[in-house]
Amino acid sequence: MLNEIVAFLGRRGEFFYISVFMLVIFFVFLISWLIEPRRLINGIFFTIFLVSLLSWTTVMIHKSTSHGLQRAYDLLFLVALFGITALLIFAWIFLFWNAYFVWKYESHTLPNLLTLIIGFIALIFSILVLVGPGRYLPHWLSALLASIPAIALYLGLVLYNFLINLLLYQIYPRHYKQDYLIVLGAGLLNGDQVSKLLAARINRAIQFSNRQYQKGRKRPIIIMSGGQGPDEKIPEAVAMARFAQHRGISPSEILIEDQSKNTYQNMLFSKRVATKDFGSDKFKAAFFSNNYHIFRAALLAKEVGLKANGVGAFTRFYYLPNAIIREFAGAFVMHKRRHFVIMGVIILFFILQAILAAAGIVKFNVV
Image 1 (cartoon, helix red, strand yellow):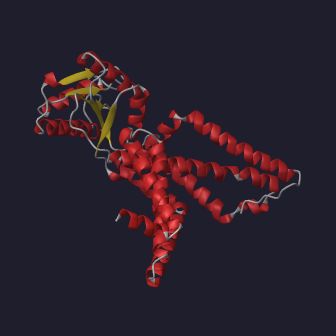
Image 2 (cartoon, rainbow, N blue to C red; image 1 turned 90 degrees about the vertical axis):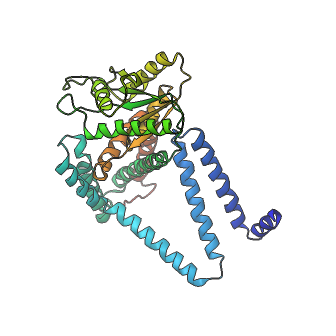
Image 3 (cartoon, rainbow, N blue to C red; image 1 turned 180 degrees about the vertical axis):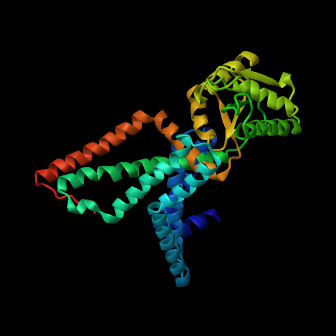
């Protein structure tokens, strides 16, 4: 039977090779993701798989004898392409819409205004793309200006890869065999009260603990991780422990880590607390934060050598775009040297184009 399938595919040339490539890249992605979901390259593998799957589907349909199916597929492809293009050009509309809700329901801090700021940038960029001012400029200046959309394209691809990894991380299999559950802290209300956002993290950890216990395994120790901010009356970890105790968690099942000031320190100091309590670093752990935050937190856990994956708590939809942009910025900074080198190469390429254009060797226009 297997030989017949191979022979069938072999008679169809490129269909056979695309099929083999698609299966190989899928298993490469799956193995890489299951072994270590905290790799940014997983998003690249998954994207290559999606492209190969699209190619496979296209070849399969166009080799069929149904002309109606082919026309319907081509029409669907064109509609999808037009929709994506329109979405990119008019993304500023969504950003402004989201900024309105964030402004209405959240505090008016700079981090909460990111979608508004980026919305204005996207609007200006869309106008420039539609107007095409490069045609009125000298060739050398057009070449220099072309570096701006090129860098924007690179940043867009980096953002896309981050989003793919963030989505994949949400569905990573959970293992209910943990020794410790690390809950990452967040700002307190009125200096000593757990916010709804922070409560969601704690409740998610309690839910996980109960589920593990129901499976007949021991209850994990919950590590509350968060120091005291300048506008807070008590450490975040203390307020979190009190909240968990009110939810029925015994004080003997809680450890406090109250020195951390950021996510990196959450991971580093919580690892030390768990290692000291367990007697070695061979423990099993999971950490808890909001769903938009867990992938970047996982990157930081990997950075400090903490073998732990994250479980995300629910976040209101309107809050996600703003929060995800902040997370992307944080992940970008983590690998800033690599990104700046690549962007530097892009800029140097267009500077060279500008020099050649100024010398009259090449003509360059931004349309």
